[in-house]
Every structure is written in C-alpha cells, then in structure tokens.
Amino acid sequence: MLPLVIIAVLIVAGYLVSLRVHPYSRCRVCKGGGRHWGSVYKYAQRPCRSCGGSGRHDRLGARILRIGQDR
View 1 (tube, helix red, strand yellow):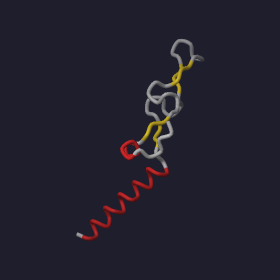
View 2: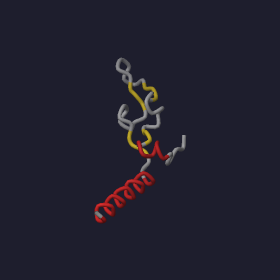
View 3: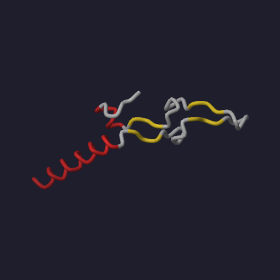
View 4: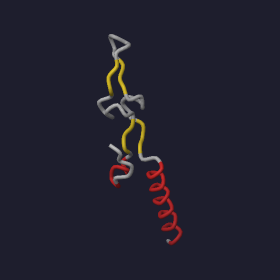
C-alpha cells in the first residue's frame, strides 16, 4: 500500500511542476497561430475568437489552481 501512495504523490508532484513550467497549451481552433485567414480574400486575417489572438489557452489544472494567469 505504501508504494502506491508514494507513486501517487510523485505523479501529482510531477503534474504540479509541469503546470508551473508550462501553464498554457496551444489553441486548438487556430492551432497556435492566433489568427484566422479569410476564405474568399486569402490575405485577410482576424484574431482568433477562441483564444483572443494569443494562440494559447490555460491548461485545465492551471485554470483550477490559477497558475500562470497573465491576462
């Protein structure tokens, strides 16, 4: 039982360190580019509505623990 508890604590600690180092993930809508390109006028672009043009989203754990929020 004790080895399982130790492994669980190590996994949680590793996840928390990972959140601290990398609190953001790439936006799935714009694929991290931060903008959408026009379909008719190929040169036209606008900021991504999902991420607000930053190209990234907070990871779930970072949102819950409020880690790395700079906006």
